[in-house]
Amino acid sequence: MEQKRILVVDDERDLCDILLFNLNAAGYQADAACSAEDALQRGIADYDLLLLDVMMPGMSGFELAKRLKEDEDTRHIPVIFLTAKDTEDDTLHGFSLGADDYVTKPFSVREVMARVKAVLNRSLIQSRQEEGSLVYEGLVVNTVNKTVNVDGTDIPLTRTEYELLKLLLEHRGHVFSRQQLLDKVWPHDVIVTERTVDVNIARLRKKLTRYAVCLVSRTGFGYCFEDVINKG
Image (cartoon, rainbow, N blue to C red; front, side, top):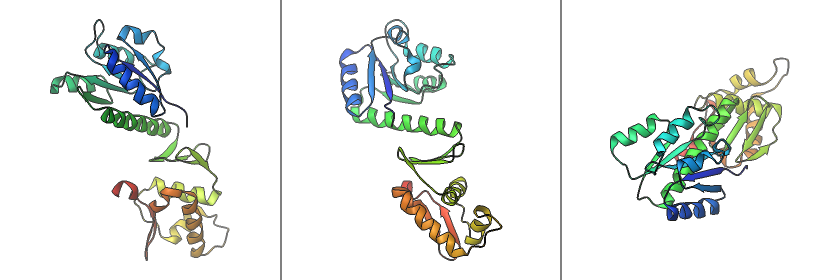
C-alpha cells in the first residue's frame, strides 16, 4: 500500500524527534516543522495527516488549522491536535475547526500511534466511499471499476461472486434467501438451482480470507454480510 506522509508541527524538538522515530518505524514517512510558519513552507497539501501542536510561538495551531480548512487544497487533510490545553472549551474549539482527534499532553507514544492509525483508516474509508466504493474494514468493493481489494491486495472474482458480495455488503445485516439471491444476481434466462448459491458463497469465502466469517449463513433462511469481526 502507498506509504502515508505525516507532518509533525511542534516547537518541542525532543517531542518531534520521538514522534518521528516511532512514525517512521511504523512505516510512515514522517517530517517535522518547528512552527506553523515553517509548516506552511513545506507543501502541506502533499501530506496525508498533520500532528499539530496548539501552543506555539507566532501562529498557533488553531490558527494554522483554520487556514488549512479554508483552503481547497488542504481542507481534506486530517488534523490531530497535540496540546496541553485540555479544557472542554479548548477541545470543542479544536473540533469546531475540523480536527479529527485531540490528544492531551503529556501522552504516551502508543496512544498517539493508535490515534494516527484510526484517523488514517477513517480518512481512507471516506475517500474510497467518495470514489464509489463499498468499504468494510480492509475490504473494498469498487463499484466503478468492479474490483475487490482485501487488505491492500486485489482479489479476482467472477462476475457472479462480485455481484453477490456487492449485494450483501450494500445491505449489511439483511438476510437474503437463496431464491432472492438467484433473482437478484443470476440472469433470468439461466436455469440454476439454490445449491448454486451455496457453491458460489463457498468460493467467495475462500477468496475473502479473514473476511470470510462475515458471510454468515442463517439456517433455514439464507445469507447475510454481518459485522462479525468487530463483534469479536
